[in-house]
Length: 81
Image (tube, rainbow, N blue to C red; front, side, top):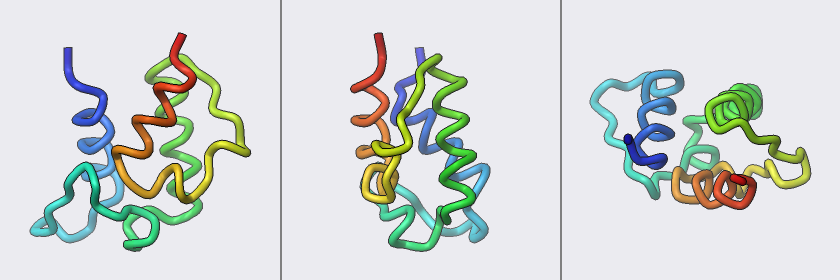
């Protein structure tokens, strides 16, 4: 089974990365780095909820929680059953 970090990183690269030469890591700043904006964050949240069959409360889906792949995975893990 693919690691959640790899799944999230791959999704971000495919959906939001415009510069094909840019390299992203699990700690790359997504929101503060300008890769993911507020609209994209909503679609990323929806992807995570559908992929992992969870509900992420809006008050937990903060820019800080979505700023790196590692932060996103930590957030998702809080809500996995």
